[in-house]
Image (cartoon, rainbow, N blue to C red; front, side, top):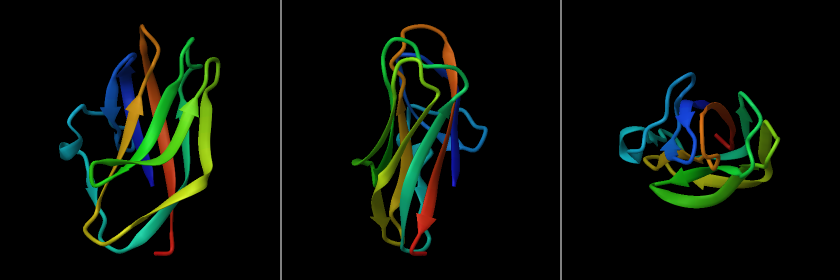
Length: 119
């Protein structure tokens, strides 16, 4: 599954939208309802340019709650991943992806992917 937070202003928290979409500050407007029980793993995030002096974090949320499945872009990097942790969803649960950009000026485009399994 693919998500984006395009033209993401730095030093803000947004929830990523569908592929090639901009993010939103209102999580409830962008949550995806899971139709069938499954799990997600291999959270990966790419930035269109290197992150500045502070980190940017991307985390999977389940029903509005942080899950601990986090990828952290460190200064000067464009890619981060959590290839270890996974999270299970039941049918009807809601999935969202939070992006906290830490730089102080400018904008970035973040492209995010997660892999469903046990579908």
